[in-house]
Amino acid sequence: MQLAHVKELEKKYLLGTYSRYELLADRGTGAYLIDKSNKRYLDLLAGIAVNALGYNHPRIKQVLRKQIKRPIHVSNLIYHEYQGRLAEKLCKISGLDRAFFTNSGTESIEGCLKFARAYARPKFRVLSLDQSFHGRTFGALSATGQKQYREQFEPLVPGFDFVEFDDTEDLERKLTDDVCAVLIETIQGEGGIRPISERFYRAARELTKKRGAVLIMDEIQCGLGRTGQWFAFHRFAPPTNKEMAPDMIALAKPLGLGIPLGAVILNEKVAAAIQPGQHGTTFGGGPLACRASLEYFNILEEEKLLERARAIGAYFKERLEELKDLPVVKDVRGEGLMLAVELKISGKEIVKQLLQQGFILNCTHETVLRLLPPFIISEKQIDKFVRALRPILEAQHV
Ligand SMILES: Cc1ncc(COP(=O)(O)O)c(C=O)c1O
Image (cartoon, rainbow, N blue to C red; front, side, top):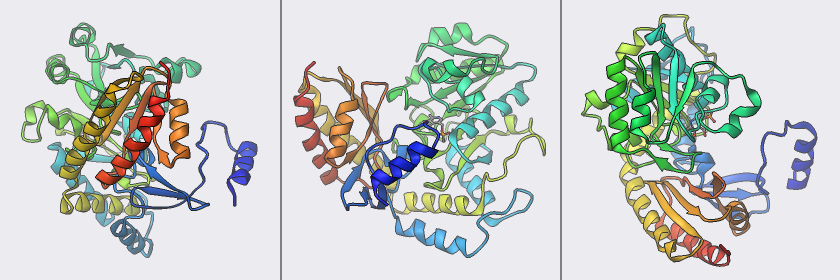
């Protein structure tokens, strides 16, 4: 089937929620996605932070092959070998105590919100940050601090309020005794790759404790290795510092490497508020997804990919910083392999031009070129991209 035919079918039958790139995916290998006409695209977005190991990883294929000979699905009424093992892994890397499995990021956020309300009853107010993105179901959307996602679906869930980004004083003002949770992305993704400061994290941790609210970190995009640490907040609160750890962490994206899987990790204090039957999901934590996920962690550890994400991320950032001499470049920022080039103009046309030249990335917040490459990306591939990007940016008028 050719791209024109696929487009025609979708135009006729699909709900029009996505504006897609001119690219019909056929297969992938390493950091490359290949289309029907055998054109290769260096994927610097990795399926929006999902394909952390690139495409077609032999070890992931191998475990999936093994598992499809066994049950792909068993209900959560029945034990299987992999859910407990994956929960143990998530607890070990986070220092928290228990895990709950979901199917997506937005569903992980929904879980966090329910657990927070159950724990802190009768308090129900939730604070999140201006310009945040937490997902599109009603709870997650209610916590999303961007008007354009919310407006059309109001009224949303009551009890949500927004704090100015990274503004400790605003947080202190709004975090009153009736707040049950503070929800924060350690590095805002959709919001334009904006990290919170250590000062803000520390204030959020200390104030939530003082007021009897829980601290939830949304590490759906920035977590699980992308910044070169298991969690981006480990920069402020290393796993050995239990006092500074959040109460809950929301995860998804690379957790199942494309087999839908999300998770909430939580401490015992919050976990104790949830009894059997109070929350659940049909698909969450199925054997296929959990097994792929366990192999993800094995690969990251055995191939030292956290170290690699740190080193290659530093190299990528250094190369992007060379572009700061161009008038159109406003800022280069990010950590590990979560990077951004902020422009003084809209980035949409630039993304299109780069796609034509065989590079996949996206533009978020209108002016921010967002880069979330797989951890296996090489210096040579980065050089190739920067060589293509420079002349395109040079040709722009500010
Ligand atoms: C930080 C963050 N939270 C939540 C979500 C929602 O995840 P999902 O699209 O899997 O529902 C996303 C997705 O982009 C995200 O980046």
